[in-house]
Each structure stands twice: as structure tokens, then as C-alpha cells.
Amino acid sequence: MAIVQINIMKTKPLTFLLALTFMFLFSGSSVVFGDELRDGLLAYGTKDYKKAYKLILPLAEQGNVMAQTTLGVMYLEGYGVPQDYKEAVKWERLAAKQGDAYAQYNFGVMYDKGHGVSQNFKEAIKWYQLSAKQGHAEAQNNLGVMYNKGRGVPQNYKEAIKWVRLAAKQGHAEAQNNLGVMYNKGRGVPQNYKEAIKWVRLAAEQGFGHAQTNLGGMYEKGHGVPQDYKEAVRLYRLAAEQGFAPAQYNLGAIYFEGLGVPQDHKEAVKWYRRSAEQGNAHAQNNLGKMYSKGRGVPQNYEEAIKWYRLAAEQGFAPAQYNLGAIYFEGLGVPQDHKEAVKSFRRSAEQGNAHAQNNLGVMYDKGHGVSQDFKEAIKWYQLSAKQGYAEAQNNLGFMYEVGDGVPQDYKGAVKLYRLAAEQGFAPAQYNLGAMYFEGLGVPQDHKEAVKWFRLAAKQGIARAHEALDLFLGRKGQKLL
Image (cartoon, rainbow, N blue to C red; front, side):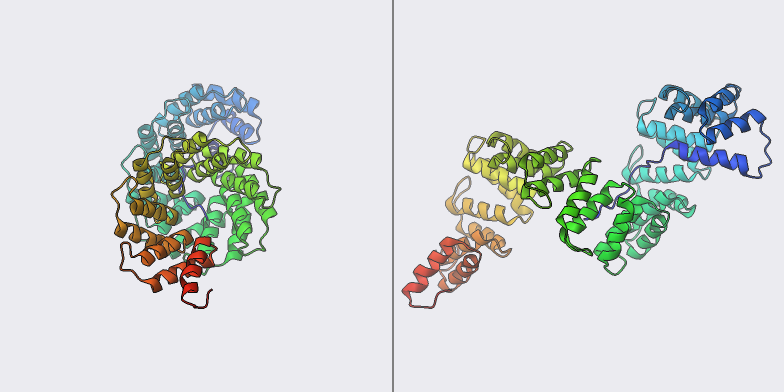
């Protein structure tokens, strides 16, 4: 349920520029700066940007590196001047070439994000490295993330660990979280949940929402700590109240399941909605389900479609599947099998087993596409290989009757058994019928009755009929 991941640094260059500004203003540095620079940086720190710009611009033009770095950020953020990425690039480049670690980091971010320059991960790496080698924690973290993702460099988890660890040891919260995630995943280091907990906790204690969410996930799953749903809820809530969308989604799921809190579908809807409104595809999909099922909200298929569509447009496979099902059934929209096929296909091509099975059904029955047993077989097989019981049953039937494949009773029995052992009632009935008839297996009425009984307990009418017919004739007691 919890989302544990390493993301490219989201902190803006301004964060570290401000730190530099106040370090200059209030530290006991022996470096002597002119009154204009001091006053300009003080104005910047107090958000008097017009005054700051007036004082800093001449100094930047004279080559003062701190003034150039500051002016670059002002153009980047639109502080006291119209936002202008190209002008920001100009000033950050000048300062970076003078060796300023903060400007090198900022310039790296601009290449990383494509702000004022064409996005270029290799160029971003170059500037992050220059800054990181000077001990800039933000640059060290970002460089580690680039190695983790393989952006601008070959993916290298050991190199990622090296740089992230350097930043983490400086107390950088995101790096601490990232280092914890790498221990959790076993990337570049042996998997170690206790070490993961150590680093993620350090970040969480600084109020970092990603880390609070990840730590909550570890308590929820019992990774490195005893499973504790209440602690998971507490941590998710801390991050959710900061507006962190993955935590809001997780908190909604916790309320939906009633883990560590009383089950409360209205509260689940509340948190799903907050996350969904920020564009979280998982939450959008789940909010769609709540509207579709009428859980925590009045049933409303139009609202369900809205949220499914938003998630589906982000390429979220479960939402694409759900949207296809809505069109197949005609719930809140006119029934449209072609539209259903389109959505099922998008989901199926991403490996969603439910959608692969449903797309197989569409080809099997000729719904929204021309009937094509071979294409049906293809999609059933993909789904069945993932262990999806309904697809195993459907594929078994194709083998039993010889649609799209040579008739193969043994192959059918094998597939029916795989699905039946997962408790899938139609497959239990079908397996019983194979034993009853002796198709693909030696005829065995006791084994047939066993599977008919299991299917009948789940309400399969034909299984009841088979038992009634067979056992009734023998004068045996029925179910």
C-alpha cells in the first residue's frame, strides 16, 4: 500500500541560496564584503526583492559570484523581476564557472529540469559533480539519484549509495530518506530493514513527508520493526497533513481497510479525494471505485468515470481496466464495447492480468472486435501466466473445446486445476465435470463430487444440479 521510492530532488535552488545568504550575514566569516552586497542580500532575505535587485545587479555585472548566484535565482523564481529562465541561466553559468558550489548546483538543476536550456542529463551530471565534490549536500543527493535512475550516466547503485550517503551524513533529510529506501530495496547494498529504518527515521524526525510516509509503510508491513498499524497511521497522518499526496492516499487506504483505525469509508473518501486532487493516479482510481460502489459517498457512475479517466490518462493500468469495465457494462455511459476494448487493451499492454483476461473475452465473444479465437488465446495465456484464475479457467475451456488451439483435455484439466485450487468456483465445477466424464484424467466420481461440492458451496447452480443428479440417484445424502 505504501509508496516507497526515490525521486529527483524537488527542492528549489532558492532553499540553499537562502542558507548561504544568512550564513554570510550572521556568521563570523573573515571575508570582507562591500556594504552594497551585504545590504542587497539582507533585502533579499527579508523579501524586499526590488531593493535587492537594485543593489545586487551592479555587483553581479562586476563579477561578484554571490551576487551572480543570487540574481540568477531571482530570475529563476521571478523575485522582483519578471521570471526569465534564460536570464537565470546566464547568471548561474557565470557564477558556476567561477567555481561557486551553490551556482553549480543551481545550474545542474536547470539542465536537469530543462529550465532556460534544453534538458540535458549529462550536462546536469557535470555540474552536480562539480558542486558535490565541494561538499554541497543537495548536489550530492541529486547526483546519487541520477546514478540510481541511470539519467545521464549508466545506472550504478553503488555510485548512487556513495553520493547519497555523503549527503545523508550531513543531515540532508531527502538523502537520509533515499539512503533508507536503498537499504529497504537492497540497491547497491545488501537489503537491511534495520538500516533502512535508521535512515528513514532520521529524515522523518526532520518532518520530511516522503520519509514519514516511507516509515509508515515499514510499520504497516513490519519491515525492520514490529508491525504496528497505529504507528503507521500516525506517520501517514503527519505527512498527509503537510499535503503529501502519497501519504494522503495511504491514509485513505488505511481507513478503507480499518487498519489501526475503525473502518470508515467516508474518511477514506476524504483522504483519497485530497490525494486525487493533486493528481495521484492511485487515489484517483480508488476514488472512482468508491463512487462506483457507493462506499462513503452516494453511488455515482458519472463521478466514477471522471476519476477513472483522470487516472487512465496518466497511463495507470488499473484505472484503464476499470474504465473499460464501465464501458462494457454501460454504467453511467452508453454501453460501448469498442471503447471497452480500447481501454482494456491499454491496460493489458502494460501487463494488467485482469485486463488481459477481459481483452481475451472480447476476442473470444466478438465484443467490440471481430471474433478471433487465436487472439483470445494470446491474451488468456498472458493473464494465466500471471496466475489469474479466471484466465486459467477460460484458457482451459478453449483447450477443452478446441477453440483456437488443438483440443487437449489434459491441458484443460491442468488449467482448470490451477484455477480451482485458487478457489475459483467455475473452474472447480469444470474440473469436477472432467473427472465425472473421465476427460484428460481417469474417470473418478469421488473426485468429481469433491470439486462439485466446493463449487456448489460458492453458489454455482450447475454444481448443485450435478450433485443432485449424481448423488440423488445413489440415494446418498445431499449437501
